[in-house]
Length: 256
Image: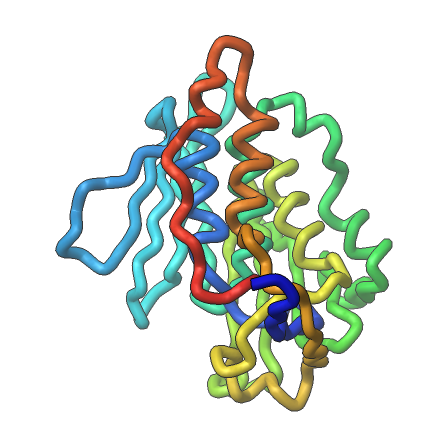
């Protein structure tokens, strides 16, 4: 029926917006980039393997460890690497990394150093370590280098210094390709709000976020469907137009 509307809630800053819908990451990897899901219907997890079999994404809702893990076996030119993200890491930031990973290597040349995006977004340079802090002081990104030369990108989001104030963490080792780290950091520093269900936000962030409700026309196609269709079109090589005829994505219950 024409004229129908829905209410969406836009939340900022991104690092306090909660995890969001995991399908934002997993559906495009499968339908646009051809990653293969594991056939394990009895387990409450998602496992996707890249077409070249070098990368595996695991989404495992285990309360005692990071929910998201991405493992790459390495090749002649680059060692193996693994990254991990907690449950409340915004899926849009994880998707920025996985999109950059699944896209052609030529995309790497268009992405600069991760810190360049933070400075442009108003993040504050740390005085006592190699890192940046978000304008509200709740998210820190540090490039840690040990005395032995090993390095790691570390992201920590917390609303206080006690354990109850912890929101999420991300760990990206130094062997992670820099353009993937940059893609994640760029999405995290983006000031644009994220669409979220207020009922699913962590309660301890409610006093520190901005929630903007707005009425929108009831969409006939969800944002996830639009995103996936765009990626299918962008990455369909000549002679593989059949990729655009994949089965339709199930409709979501609410607009993103």
